Each structure stands twice: as structure tokens, then as C-alpha cells.
Length: 478
Image (tube, rainbow, N blue to C red; front, side):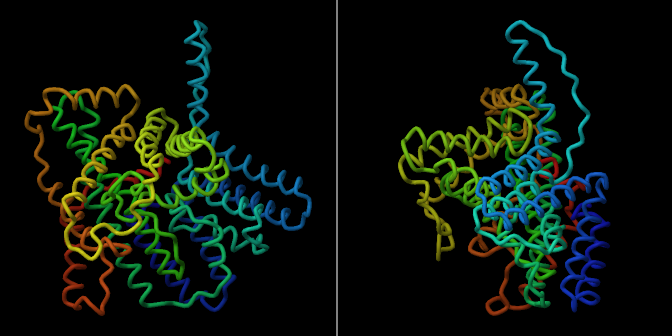
């Protein structure tokens, strides 16, 4: 079920009414409703894959129980590896089997041998990369004794399958989200209103920005040999805003929807395209994934401790694994490695934590230096996105080669003026609100009611007038 679909427009009010008007007096029943609604939401896409999420939930629930009752470190470690093996086993089979099989066969071809390996017709379950990491965080935190294992099976199953963020994040930690299922939720009108505003902004980013940019990005990337280098630059720019509008839009809708039901999810995007260097970009982009890899992979590997070689190795590992998490394609691996190359010089100079504040703090406009920093970081990001979007490495290098040809200095083959204007609306709104959680966070105490409602109706009008053709969220395929 898509957030930008008529089915969800019907589904959400029904669940909301049942949640607050029918089941609010009984926490167990309320959690059961969330669980049922989440399974309906997920099963709407393909009910057969409900068995996967249910099995993963059963395994991790009983692994947690087993860890709590055991004083043997060896037994606890065995239980942890059962959880890791089951979850990563499912993820590896559905997402990476064909990739490894094909590359295994290709490796033998290099040495003059030919092996035939049949490619399996595997359907990738939506959201498997997200809920796998979410439930793994529970098992790991229980093993490390950072979290008491739950005996409330309904709360745990609802935590794993919580529908607002089930298929594309944020990837919630058990330490943050699971305890919220234990406490009685009381309807908070102010929180619900802000949730609706965040949902509206998320829909604007998805329907107006991402879907319109997608039409041009797809046309240019799919027919790149027909266009000039300057047009290909536009194509990369459109994809840059497509993936931001698409993914951060999903996160806004997920976080806003959760607030309607009394839950607080972690922030997943913090206006990343205003970053002054790549390190800041990665503190602002897909925060739930980058912090997951930091806490569960980078730090256990040794992090930035030890020798210089160790620091570089760990940095490459986390970025390459992050790239590979996105998909079974060498393009994602190169995308991750490229970002590692961007990041390492900052780390070596101890400048990777230089910018932790909001840019142009307490100022309307950035300085010239800040403009240059944003421009350089944004350009590096656009270049890396070419690999992310390309079908394969040949496509990526062909696309880049065409950009750096003489046709770069010719005029563009297309004139998508209205899309560029819409992007400028997005950038302007988010720049003005860059110290807020989202662009429509307009507090009543310092913004007049007339102004606030003019902005809200203006965003609704833009959605109605300029909504692009409905497209699935990009991260559904990850």
C-alpha cells in the first residue's frame, strides 16, 4: 500500500478512528490493532511475504527470551548468531542470491572455465532490508544487555511491523520504539496537528518534487546517448532531487503518521543538501541507517581507534557495506566506495566533526565561503548519485563520459522550467526552516494564523496542480 494512494487515504482514517475511539481504553487491544493494521498494510502488496516478517519476529522474540533466562555467555552468543543467521539469511537469499551466483560464474569465466548457473526468479519482499535491521537491533541490544527482553509478544510483533515506517524506515532502534508500546498513549492534539503538517510536506516532496523529477531523470538516464552533456547534468540533478524528495518525503509521512498515533520516531533527514562537507552530509542523510552502521558495525570493528590503516579500512567497510545494503549491483558498491574516498581526507585531518550546527545560524543568508562549501559538497553528491541511478557500471561510465564531452557546453535538449521552479520552491522553504524538524513547522506563537493557513493551502494547491504521475517510492526496491 502506497502512502500516495487512494487505498491509504481510506486506510489511515479507519485505523485512526478505531485506535482512538474504540480501543484507547485497553493498551493490549490497541497494540493488537496496530499489529493487525500493519499486517494488512504490508500484505496489501503481497500477502505471501507476511510469513517472512512473522517468522523473523518469532525467532527474535524467543531469542530475546532465551538470552534473558541464560547466564551462559556461550549460549547467549549462540542465540545471537541464530538471530543474525536467520535475518541475514533471508535478506541474503532474496536480495543477493542472483548477484553472488552470477559473479561466481563470471569469476570462473575469467580463468577460461564456463559454469552455467540458473538465475532464480526471486521477488524481493518490500522493506526486508529495513525490518531486518530493526529486529536485529533488538537481538544485539538484548545480548549487550542494553535492553531488557520483552515478554509481551503483541508489543514486539507490533514494533517489528509498525506500518508507518515498515517498508522504508526510519530504521528504528528497539531501545527507542519498543518501550513506547508498553505505555498508554494519550491523544495529543498539538502533536497530531504537527504530524499532519509533516505528512503534508512529505506528500509535497514525493508527489510534486520526486514524481516530476522522476519523469525527466528516467527519460534522460534511459536514453543518455541521445542527449548532450549539459542535458545529462540536468538528468543527474533531477535524480538528486528525485531521490531526496522520494525518500525524505516517505520519512516525513512515516514520522507524521506515527505522531497521529502517539509515537515518536527518530529523525531521518536534516536538510542534507545544505551540508558544508561530506561528513556533515552523512550526519544529515538517512540518519537511521548511517547511525545503525556506526553503532553495530563501525564501532565493533574498532571505529577510528588504532592505526591509520585500521581507520581507513573501517571507513571503507562501512561505506561499501552501506552501498551494498541498497542493492545487489556493483554500482551501489562504487557509490559507497566513492563516498568513502570523499570522507577519508576529512577524517585524516580530524575535520569530519567540524560542522554539527545549522548552517548560517542566526543569519538569513550564508557567507560566500558557505555557498562554495555547499556547492562543492552538492556537486560531489550529484556525481556519486550517477552511479546509484545507473543500471550497471557500463551505463554509469558511459553517462559520465558523455557529460565530460564537448557537448557539455552546448544548450540543453529539454526545457523543464516548471520543474526547476518547483525545486527552487522546495529549496527556499527548507532553507528558511533549516533549524526546524520540517519545512511546515510553523509555531502558532510566532507565525500569524493567516500566514500559516496560506502556506498550508498553497502547498495543497501545488500538490493538486503539479502532482506528477504516481510512482512507487524508490526505496521500496531496497
